[in-house]
Length: 494
Ligand code: NAD
Image (tube, rainbow, N blue to C red; front, side):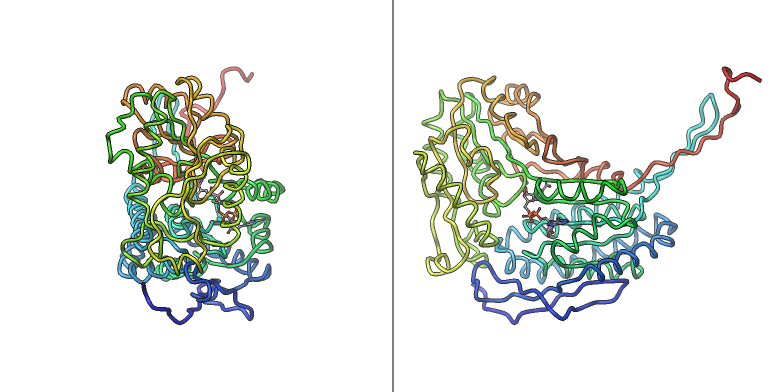
């Protein structure tokens, strides 16, 4: 366990100036809620308008800055972030509650993506010139304008940099608004990145609904890049409708893991991967496996082996204890919500089994902890199965045959990721029929994520893709310049 530290202040960034507000919002440590980790500004609508104006002004020169210079600046920012890695990950662990290894993992994914975006941009964003029968065509990938990026608390750094790197490299300017539930480490990250760019290119504001409303309705904002809940996205779409903004939406998920009859129950590593795909970051990941369906022919044995594997891997406690694999839940609201789903299932007759060991009972008692649980015997339509839990609990349910499993997996408003566990050919056949943005075979959640390939959801899990070449192109508009050999059309009379 690491000793308490003095609270820090983070700032808003408007046109290169660090701004504090009269009222600052405290962020407590979810492991030790009586400790204030730091304070973030509470920006007003007026501050947000200033930030948007600064980004709009900076766009005029930034959009005309050569691609190579934009990439070079991002590469310098990446080098600085690497140097600050330990300071950032410690702060992230402290304000978020995710164990230190997990905070390091978040930085690792963030930096891998930023580097990939720098490398890939040279190819993906360069102007194409096509000589063809009818003449010559230039295809240009132009920046869109001012981008509002609004992000959630669960992966504050990676879900901001997933937007910042491609947006700035493509020549856009930005205003970023992180979640008040984890505003500190990401502010440090944005401050470091912004220091490598001209004033006004990357701005940062903090706050709640008023700030969010301005960012999503201001006519000078050309694109919204949002990651968060599906219900919030519905408000955002309405707010953005009047000025027809471009949009990338990465939303909630209720990802199914399907365990086929030929899954090797003795494959301890695969079983551990499945457990991790349910309980990493205390289950607070959009793409975590949130319902497990198991072929009824192996259901009983599976449950027994799963519980054994979970009891081995899950060690709950202080995120700074290197033995700990699962930390607290990020905030009290989320603790109450997850508990309500578990209680609802229990009240309807489901069996709730506690998993893992609590390493620090005193800390557990006082912090925002929930002991991880598995829920057996729930109904397919119970809230714990149908709703996104976003916490350390998972239901396991049997299915009759592959058709039934596919039907159950697809019976959801969501379609972010999914996973199929079994012999590869068999698993691929089932995977082909699942409605999801990504389906992983014998792995799940971030373990199967690769920043080279596009990521996003179908149905109400989102619109558009991040990561991969698509993750860069989504911050551009295509501009075609046609030079025909003969501009006259044959069917138009002389
Ligand atoms: P949330 O929707 O409550 O908040 C997300 C952000 O939106 C925050 O910054 C919040 O302050 C802001 N916001 C709230 N109301 C707003 C409004 N009216 N206008 C503009 N902005 C507003 O989500 P959360 O609780 O922070 O995060 C959890 C959710 O995020 C889960 O549903 C999870 O699945 C989803 N998520 C999705 C992905 C993905 O890639 N698909 C990744 C991580 C999290």
